[in-house]
Length: 329
Ligand code: GDP
Image (tube, rainbow, N blue to C red):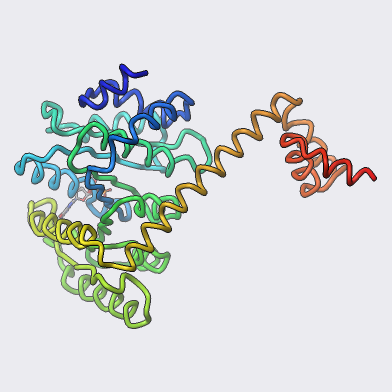
């Protein structure tokens, strides 16, 4: 175990890739390793890039990676795609993405995919970010597809979240309403080489202004709305400059809003972990006591209501004898 930790701290790609896979698979060994890596994390700048499929996130990420490499920064990229059919999709994705960076050991790219573990994506992405951070990457980019709750949670994990949109909002209006506006520290209107980028930028600006005047949103940070063309490699420097401005703003620590946001994220992380571990423990114990299926039968046959069954499960596994005794009296 110490050996693996040392390897990852030294930037060993194979050890890191294996650990990320184990995290994704929910292996208990991964937790032990993450505990040991934790003291070596907290140095990387974590950036989230999110938006609907097809807006140009991966092209933009690729351009940004190239830009960072010209500045001698090492980069880790986690491409989170809950919609991709796991393993095959993710691995294929990595291959495609790695093109052009495969000979560059300053860049490490991985895809994350859920493996049937309900709600596991946020947690495993968080773990994977820690691994890249511990490897010594200067910048970790978390690219997420889509705009569901999972993706919003993942986007929140980053210090700076870039929302990518493309001209002509259309369907994206829904996404914006669904809360994506709230999580954006920077907005990039990509495909600015297409018509309508100015109009879209203007629409976003007025939405942000409306939010601010309603007392919502970032309050002490006005999210910049930039135009980029990943295809033509335009606006990338400006995007990075905006990210650095946001990073410095955070580092100054004067924002009550971001301080509270930071607490909220930490709180969510803990609650999420406790929930998952409690659920795992309950399921494991239940397994030892004849499993869930007999209780499922009981419910299907309508012999008992689901509330009573779930209470009984908790009573049994936590051995809440007192209560059981009381109930018997
Ligand atoms: P993602 O699904 O958000 O990751 O989007 P991709 O990066 O895969 O890009 C989707 C499509 O849009 C691809 O065909 C890209 O070549 C194209 N694309 C990406 N950026 C731009 C851009 O700035 N301008 C134009 N015109 N097309 C772009």
